[in-house]
Length: 80
Image (cartoon, rainbow, N blue to C red):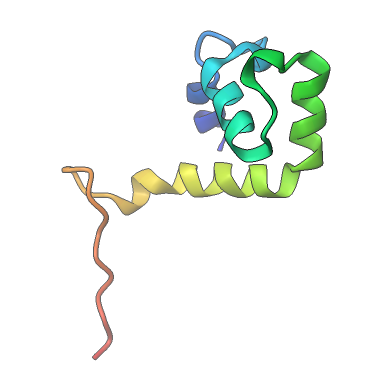
């Protein structure tokens, strides 16, 4: 999960509230305007929605494990 955070905050590691991608994710999820997200607003929103946020990070970190070389999802085998 830390690797994913490193990639998502690329170029903004010490200022994640300035990352265009993270701003877009917060805007999409919470409805806050991306241009209006500040240091305190970013951390308030991350804290307020920490469970869904960390759930998303866990899901996104697991995605490479669930895809093949072509980038498509692997099919689960049925036990039948």
